[in-house]
Structures are given as structure tokens and as C-alpha cells.
Image (cartoon, rainbow, N blue to C red; front, side):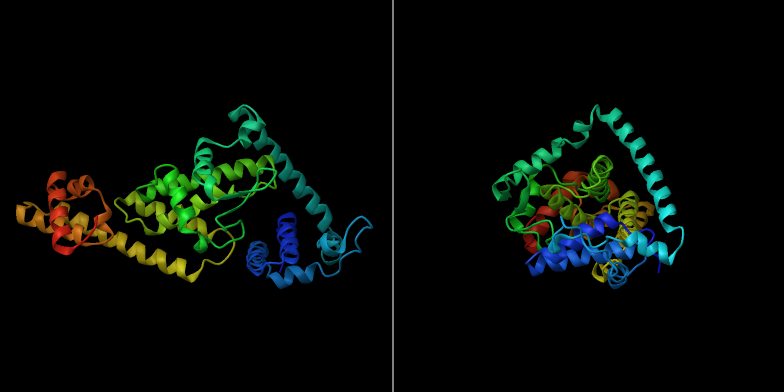
Length: 328
């Protein structure tokens, strides 16, 4: 396999962290990230490690525990592929040239480099909402939120943190809204990493919010075709990140997509039935309210689809609460 596209600096940081941490959870998470970076370059983790096995001796200023694991990598590749160093240098020059052009555009858009890096209004709200859960270092860096840190698994996000970031400002109510906010945060990270290549991560409160958004993107019921497209766009983005999508995420996506198709198909059928008697309207409303996913739609949205008033839907919702014991 070729390693021409290996992000050496990023892999090096993660690899060093994996070898230096004394916590098993952090070591496992760092190993997973390193494997993902290697996979994006068309390599396995073992192949990446094997490629750097012939390292130069560290300089006297470097310690054994923190020496660069990629020292001598370029020379190693040059022996395997003559001309590699020249090609790599030209590719690096082109990337840097493109980066500087993007930097200029961002500075013009925001007014200054400091403005690009500054916390936006949403970040301020998230940090404020998580302040009582945050462990803050001397330099202001938030190292964890109620024990949940940068290398913790998404599924381990504490309920306390989940609630805090959900309450910081209004959560998206549709898949389209969740997708728009997810893209907003992704764009902010890309902008900052353009100016500072080591800023390839979100502040921890933002990262927690993104975890919640990810869940909404795969769990919110689709009310429109736009919602379905937004869900598919997110899944496609997930597949293009450079590593295998977990089977559970694939299953979740397929299940929700089936629900989407079923829901929209029923909506089309309802819209085609003419004349639509009061009895049929009642049956249609009951069908929506009895379905756990569809019942999450607002009274106004269900009313628009079926062709009744929002008050009619609300009345039936109250009756079902009594009859079925649902707490809405």
C-alpha cells in the first residue's frame, strides 16, 4: 500500500499520545484515531508502524519518551520510491499556497485572524451552560466535563453534560435543522484549522453538542423529503471520513430510512384520497399519534398533512394520553 497521503503530523500526535498515556481508555481511543488516520491513507495501523520502524536516532535534545516516531520517514520512502521527497515537497508547497489563499479569504470575511479564532455566540452559551461541570486548566483549557474528556467515547457522554448542552440554546426540531447546525460546527473547525493546522478539534462543550446533533440526525423522524435528504447527506459524509462506518450506525441509518419512506408514502396516500371524510381524517390523525416517531411531529405539522385543524390534533392527542397512558 502507498502512504503518500498519510497525515504525518496528525498521526504523530496521536501516536505519541497513545504511547505516553497511562490510562487504558485514552490509549484505546488514541489507537482508534491512529488507525483511522492510517486507513485514510490506505494503510493499516501495523503497516504505518512498520513504515517508520527504520528511524534515525533521536537528537541529544530529544528524550526517548517523546522522540518523533516519523524521523527518517521521508528518507525511507525515497529509498522505496525514488523522487518521493521532491513530489512530497511540491505537494506541500501547493497545499501551503492554497492554505494561505484561504487564510486571506477568512481574514477578509471576519475582519481579522483573531476574529476567526474567537468563540462565537453559540460557543459562549455552551461554555456557560457547562461551566459547573468543567475542569479547567491554568491556561483556560477545559480538560473534561463531568469526567468526559477529548478521548472519551461518544456513547459515554454523561447525562449531566448532555442536558447542559441541550439546554444551552434551542435544539433542532427537524433533521434539516440538525444537519445545518452540524455543518456549521464542521465549517468553524475547518476555518480555524486553516489558520492553525493544530486546531483540528472542537472545544469540549461544542464536541458534546455535536454528539447530541449526531444522535438527532439518526433519530429524529423525517417530516419532509428535505429531512430524508439531510439524513442521507450526513450518512454519506460519515462514509467519506476515511474509515469504516460501525455496523450499528449502518443499521440505525437503514432502520430510520425505512421509517422515513413509510412515513412519506403514507403522507402521499393521505394527500391523494379525495374526498377525505371526517372518519378518514380521524383515522389518519390516530395513525400518526399512535406511532412513536410520527407522534413527535407538532400538532400543526400533522394537521397540515392530514387536512384538519391543529386544535383537532391536539384534542385527539389529549384523548390518547388518557386512553393509552402516554406522557407527552
